[in-house]
Length: 115
Image (cartoon, rainbow, N blue to C red; front, side, top):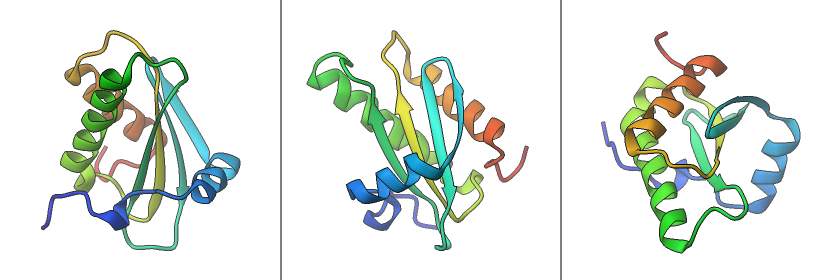
């Protein structure tokens, strides 16, 4: 199984983001929030956004890259067919903390393949 994050697995258009924000179910924890909606595709798509005033460009890019990597490493544990948007809040969180937040949100929202 190819483990990289392909172009089809990313949500890129602002209309898709708006559609998901308007009608998606949500779940949140300290430091992150997830919006998810069922899509008609056989695979998951992810979009990552940050709250306003999230540090400088280096911090924003690191947070975005780390969440993409966490999703990429765990995409086979998520039920297929969902559009997922992760909102990351600023804070002093390590990579491990972000990974725990991701797992918590996936389990809490019912997207985990195996609980």
